[in-house]
Structure formats: structure tokens, C-alpha cells
Image (cartoon, rainbow, N blue to C red; front, side, top):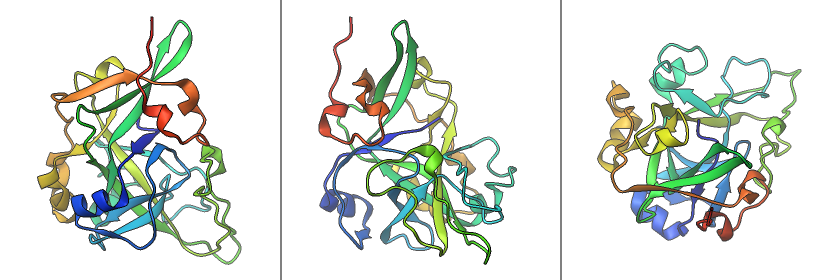
Length: 237
């Protein structure tokens, strides 16, 4: 699965890389977690970074709890929670690394996976809009413990826009850490993922060439911790 990721670059770099603009500010992030409102580029407005909440809530859900943070590439065109979004509401999720956890004798050890040059890339995502009925109040995604002031529950009773990250089989590098990995899109495939009629060809594992994985501090386990020290390589012995 993909349960945490990083986006350490400045706003101007992101805007130039994706030819899209933020309506508000953006600061580098080192521990982006489920339940937080995070920047994505959705297919209905590819020139704008929108902040959606990580944890997809299907439009037909009875309430907004239990958002789905990942969608398996092999079944997104079949599962009721994702089928309609796959057809009509795709997005790209900018990132420059993601975390995976490995079982060790000392407990789970987090690793950061990134390109060797820490370049920004796109994760394939789906987005959805859920609207409460008159008897429903927005409960947020407290179950994910998002932390920070960008947590899911903003006190609004209006429509809730959420996203999920698509996962696939791991490449050779990630296979040593986990049995799934996020779908990384090639830059030339990003627009086709957003608007193409048959984007399934882009859901294969990204080659591990030019990628690295290294252990980091267990402080990343706490989603309220978001600081540069989280991405520093940790010496293990």
C-alpha cells in the first residue's frame, strides 16, 4: 500500500513542473498522511492544484467515514467504490518520495523510496465528490489520524472531495519492502492518464532504475510530525 509520502519542493517548482497553479500557498511537506487535505491535479481542471482529502469516499456512501486511501490497479474498473471514478474522475498526485514499513527484530522500520535525484513525479489517483443528505453531518476521517491543521474535518457540511492513490505490483526495489507500490506515471503519460479513454496501460510497476530506498526515523510514524529530519537517511547496524 501507499500510506505516507513526501513533497519537499517549493511551490514555484511544482507550478512549473506541472504547468498548473495553486489558488493558495504551499509549503514543503515531509509526512503527508491520510485524512489530510493535499494537493492534486484533477481531470476537470488540469491547470489548477486542488486540495482534496486523502481517503476516497464513494458518492453513494451513507456517510463520509472510512475513506479508502488506496485502490488496486487490477480491480479499479470493477470495484463499485472506484469504477465510476476510474471512468470519469482521475487525478495525479504530485510526490517526490513515499514511505514503506519493513518488519525487523526491533519492530517495523520505515523506509523512504524516491528517485536518486529526489525529482518530483506523479502518482496515479482517483477522486470523488460526496455530498451529505439533510440528516448527515460531516464526520471527517478521524480514523486516519491525519494531524496538522490540514486534517480532514474542516467543520463544513458541504460537498466533500476526496482522493485515493492507485497501487500495483512492486518493482524489484520495492518488492524487498512491501508487496504493493504506488503507480508512478511517466511525465509524458500524465495528461493521458487524466483524459484518455483507456489508461490501463499506465498502471504497470515503474522500473526501479534510478530509484533508491533507505531507512528513516520512526518519527515518521506520527502523522503530526512533519519536518526535514524525517527524510534523512538513518544509519542501521
